[in-house]
Length: 218
Image (cartoon, rainbow, N blue to C red; front, top):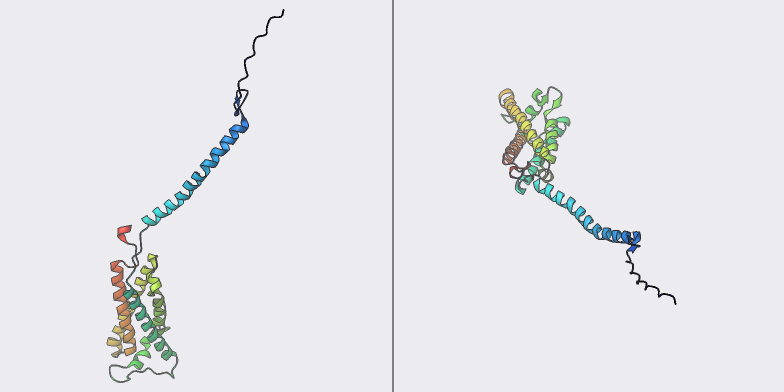
């Protein structure tokens, strides 16, 4: 009689993720892909947050430009237009002899004598009226509300330098009228007054810091 065969132990169930005790490549890849998909939104969220944070930090640390009050912007702009209008009138009368200045021609006030004198030409080439016209064309732009609100301090520097040069030229013209010609021109004087007021206002605004970087944010 044959001896009974020993009972074969039941086969252990293989793990779905293993093959003969070794990790199943497909299952490992599936788990890796799932992990990457789970991490991808977080990575994108962190990557999107970094530029926003960097931009906010840069904006917070950048010095702000001090903006002049509206009354100062409009006052300097109106003065610039007034000077421009008179300069256009003086330029027209300089080149068009048919147009006469509405001004006295006798006594100390004599606009015609002043505007036709040799001193009315700079270096004998450039009419003073044309130089005044060019100056006020620039000031209409430099003293406009948009220029006052510019974030570039260079605009304020150029505006200040222009009125400094302008008032220096005005002082020379006043000296010439009073001590060389012994006559004054009322139209020229109106331009001189407008230039002086612009000089005072722009100088004070620069001293206060309007148009420049705020020191408390630097």
